[in-house]
Image 1: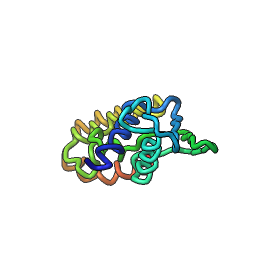
Image 2: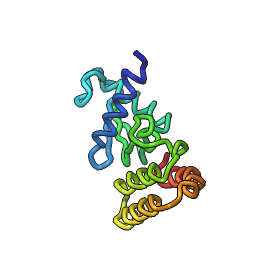
Image 3: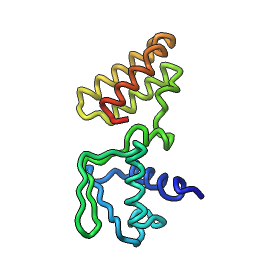
Image 4: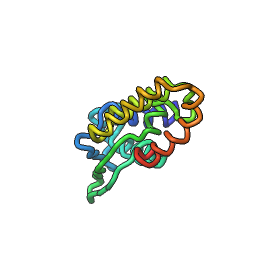
Length: 155
């Protein structure tokens, strides 16, 4: 079994399904006890996986702080769009081939929108895309969504 399958993918899936409370994640870099939520992964392995996932661009955080005992906290922690893509939970932007697929991406973005205004705008955009011609949408989708994802979502 690969390290990805044994450690990193289960940690990424767990972080996606159970977002840290208030965006704050705690890890222990020196404890060999099993992680409470992932019994097959130790605290050290969990900590190492978080570091590897950040290096790969699958998770991100705003600030990280450690203590002398090996504990570390990460604030504004989140799984990125790239992390969701590798798990098969989000479509790959460069693979969009129809207005329906683009509308699904806009719907997913609307679900995670920070404000009601953003949510409404994304929902209206999804509805407009569903009514548009496939040729027009295909020509714009990849570049526009890639730019949006990189600037707004950290993908």
